[in-house]
Length: 353
Image (cartoon, rainbow, N blue to C red; front, side):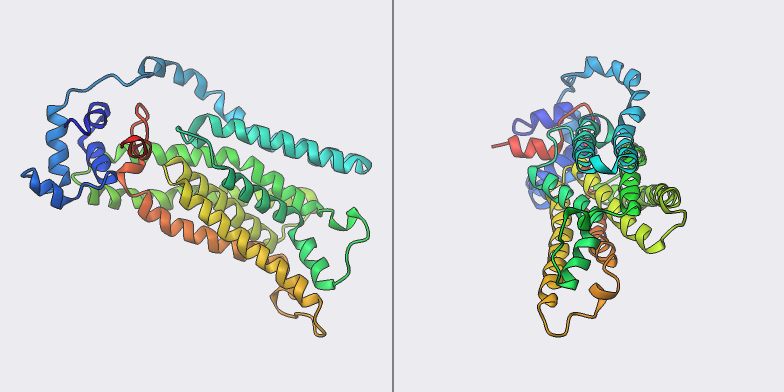
């Protein structure tokens, strides 16, 4: 009780204490030493014996509903910035480079604002610098990767910067990914709300995990149609037709971003960073293979030569599937769904000597 008093005082349900004890390494064997059959039984006694306290900042929670109407507008900002930049680059090709740089800065700032508030906010800290680096690489590869692979396979270096100019379809799909921040935030909020509602009825950590795992699949199934619709609309507006291969590749990238952020929000930023780093490593390997094959007498005639655009889809799909498999296990832990009125259990574990 003394060692875990802060955790017990801030908990709103015994299952939160059980999850915190589990995160601190307390097992059923340790619970036996305290004459309890399992960790959950020990958590129930701690919940009953430690008085509740009012969490810091609780008095400010009443102001939250007033900000909820503003959040959709905030999550639209990245898409609006990208749309403005795409239109500017189309109307003023001479100022394309300047418009592209300004668009990247504006969209990045808007995305940072989205991550500071609302359902995509981690709570304790923003994403690590490594995650931002992987995100920039994946976004750049989405815009320029297919052209870079084609140039590498041809063995002829570009004579000017226009050779690496992204095609209109790639720009449109990137804009659609920026607009997908809004449905991603809605799906993340839906998942967090539904998972929190499973805490009280769950009789044990195992039953809670079994109830939350379908919610992970539900969040993905809610997000994917929204993402595919945005990508298809972007293709139709940019080129007049929908390219299934390009839409699938961009959808894999959007799903990877969504799963990485969902894991980060719920206290698993390391796994999210590893998933994005895996996709970046595979794409870098594809670029290296293209450059190496161009130097051979018989250039590479496999997937890279016939379908260079498939590299993004395959690499991002592999990373997204790895994150989804990890998410079914990690997001099923009660420690991933701490109360909004208290710090995350991961932060409490890091702060405990």
